[in-house]
Image 1 (cartoon, rainbow, N blue to C red):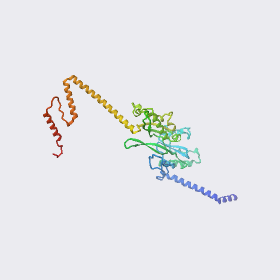
Image 2: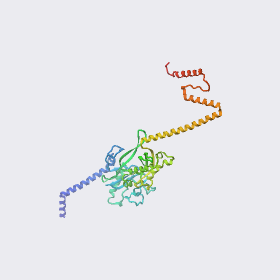
Image 3: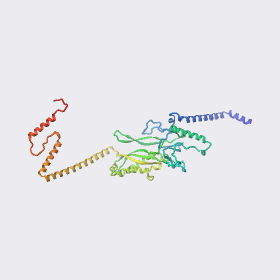
Image 4: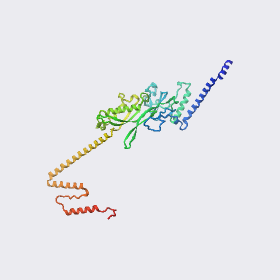
Amino acid sequence: MDYYYSVFLTTLNNPVFLVLAGITVGTLWLGLVLAIIMFALPFIPSAVEMLANDPNRWTSNPHPDKRDYPVSNFGFFTKVLPGQVKVIERGGRFIRCVMRFDEHMFRGEEANSTILRNSAKYWEVIKTKKGNQYTDSHPVPLKPKWKDGWITYPLRLIFWKWVNLVYFKTGYLFTGLYPWQYVRVYPIDYFREIDNEDGQTDLQKVGSFSDHFRVADFQFPIKVGEADTKDKIPVRVLVNAIAQVENPYLAAYQVDNWAGRLAAAINDAVVSFTRPRMLDDVLSAANPEEVRMLSDSILSIGKKKSMRNSILPFGLSLRQVLIPDISPTNKSDREKLGDLAIARVDRQAKEERAIGDAAQLREQIEVVTKGGDVGLSVLATERDVRAAKSAGDKAIVILGRGDSDPLQTALLKEVRDIRNNKPKKGDDSE
């Protein structure tokens, strides 16, 4: 017994042991203090926002045209908005997806599902089935179970209750201890609609970073600036696609940039439509069915997996495609088409006037043929009436055939002059 006691005293007096013991105790105390701070910070006003992730933290421009600023991966918490999915990673390795989308769930979370969590099919978003055994996918993980480890169960249960409390009190979800665990962030390029000075709608390119995938419907405007036609006159096509991410796992890991691939697929569909058609066929359609041909050709890339430019293999689908504008790219071409349209309208107007004049001439011939001298008198009177109408109130036209009375003409002219020179009401001039 004395031997062990002497060894114990020797160990306590060993400087190395004292250093290691001090480090261990200090680490434990530091860990305890940090744990208390972490548990308390979310309930301090504005503290959780400071600890939340924001990939565009280092820019003040909400719509930057270039990603000329560093991305921010920092964050212990994140906010998941309705219709969004965020991917949690640890050291670049996939951990799980978190979703907030009413009446929707991940396929792998169905009751009695045997799909593994590391399978892409597990994270496919589907409609929640009716029944008590089915629930929507929730951002907060499921409550821990005894069978997963009864020794650590009390700690896991306390931590789970804290995560729930933070989420329901602040709306922020705890994602992990940064920098070991964080929300996946990726670069994204997209277009936003703006109004030009002339009142026309145009698209402005935005280059930023994103930390989520939109599993509810979202608008994705795209501008195809140079789509060739069969007669080599390029057109500008504005496309407004209504899309959604059906599988965020595929969108995150099956493709390097889902937004870029979607824009490229739409561009390819537009060019494939315009290239074999003449400009006039692209700009105008003969019937409503042809108007929808371009929209349907774009829509097919998000509906058919067999299409060579299909977007389904990387987890996206299209719900609707709108074409707000198709116009020639060059301003001179637009002006020529405008002149051509005016010329067509003018030609049609002349044709209609010619038809009216021809009908009037036929009527006059019929009057003369049937009426003889009386018909000629009627035509002469009608001619004088039209002459008077054309002359307006600045000329004197004597209706009737034969010689006019010079005295009567002079009197009429004098009356006209007096009336024209009469002072207006309220005029004091003599």
